[in-house]
Structure formats: structure tokens, C-alpha cells
Image (cartoon, rainbow, N blue to C red):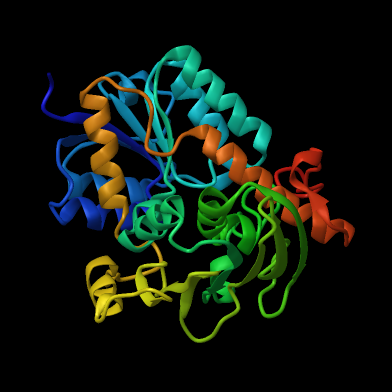
Length: 357
């Protein structure tokens, strides 16, 4: 068995800088970065010097991908689909940053293509592997909350106008607004742990930033078990990222996961609870993180590399999960567009996200 996964990276911008810090941390094992790709020569040559590896301006260049086992795609959101499809057709494993695609149907297409080609198509929903979120997932599966009453997600992040003054952030065709760009991680958690979701009612607006899509959204969610959910999200919080929280109210107890990346247990209180249990849970399941990305890319990447070395192609989070979360996102947008409740199984899609220039 090979000792290292040979990696090619497409996209050397903002997210790549985060990945680079994680690679430098030496907490990720069993990999070798063999090639880089970006249209921006300055970014490419800088990354080439840092990593001491080959750099290309075209991901379709056979020299870029001929020696790689896995391609990591960190490009503009609206380009993910076509780049993923290219490498899946080449029978190369893919790990893509969120959103996998701009529409649900294209995520489903990539899922089926990966199955056909017998390769991996993974999506970086890394927050699923936060210790705090793993605790919540296990606790819900074990039923320790009892009957769920309410689930709420709150994202209060800060993006100044400079963030939107490029050619893609906040654009309908290439990105979307806070729902599809920032909150998608938290919507994925909400759907994955507490779903299925029956219907949603959502309102969006632009409060402080100038962009095609929205910088602020509020929504009500109805789950199939009868519980309700609330969503508040904005990139117009000032002056810094403040929180990304998840709260659960159940008949047997209540929990709140907070921090700027759902990384800390803030409240863990139950009717039948041992003395000092809350303090212990907080200590064992909370992390200090430097930014909204969190630290769970480390866990995710280590899992992916181990699977590839074992010649397994089912990733920790696959394209079908991205498909289901994309349906949730589109339903929220469609509700905002129509000012109506929208059923998730109705097939309704946003008329703007992924379509409107």
C-alpha cells in the first residue's frame, strides 16, 4: 500500500490560505502535494515557492493531473461543478469545497458519475466533525433529548463591502448570498441531524452590503417529527464575526453550541444530570478556533486520505448529502422569492441561484 496520497489543488485564493495553514500544522498525515493550479500567476508562483511543487494555469493540462490520486477544488463556487465533472470523468478522486454545485440536480449528477467511475466525490462539510457537533449527533441518535421542541441556528458574521467587490461573491450565478455561501454549513448540520424537513418559510434582504443576493435572512423550519426550527443569518454583523450557534430544546434537556464555528458547548443541561457533568461535557467537547473555518478540516482530510490509501471511494460526506442540503438551500430561496411556505419535496427551485447573471 502507498504511504501518501498524491494531491493536486485547483484554486489558490482565500480558502487555499486556510488549507495551507492546516498543512503547515503537521497535524495532517499521509499526503504529498504534487501540483497546483490557478489562473492568477502571482498566487500560483507564490504558492509554488512555499510548497516547492509544480504550478499550472490550466487544470485540463495532463501534466497537472497525471500523477495525482486526489484533486482538491477550492475555486469560485460557480465553477465547482464543471471542474469536478472533468476529474471524475478522468477517474480521479475529488474533494470539493462547499457548495458542491449551485443547483441540486448537478450535485446528484456528480454523485451518480462518481459511482459510475468508482471514484470519490467528497464535499467539505467539515463542521460535521467538530467535537461539539459530533456530541450533538450522537446524543440525538441515542434519544437523550427526548421529544424535540425547537432547533435554532444563528449565524452572525461580518463581511464588509470589500468582500463583495470582486467578480463573484454575492452573485447569483457564481455564489449566492449568506444562505448559500456562509450558512450552508449550518443548514447542512440542521438537516443532517434533525431532518427530514417538511417545509420552510423564509425572508431575505440586503441591509448593509451591496450585492446581487442577500446579506441577511430569517426563516422558520418545520420538521417531519413536528418540531420547529428558526434560522437567523447575516454577514452584516459588525465589527467582527460574532457567532455561529446551534440550540436544541427537548423534553429532557437543552443544549447550545456556540463560538464562531459551532465549536463550543455553551449550555448542556438535562433533567437527570450528574453533578459537574455540564462542566465535563464543555471541557471535553469544545475547541478554540482561529476563525469561522474552524479546525475540523484536519479531521476531514485525515479521514479522506486514509480512505483513499485503503482504496475506498465513499467519502465522509458525499455528493448525495450535498444534493439534499442544496434542496434545503433552494427551498429557502424559493420561499423568499414567492413569499410562501415551500415544501422540500415539491421540486421547487430558486429562480435566481445558479441561473440569474
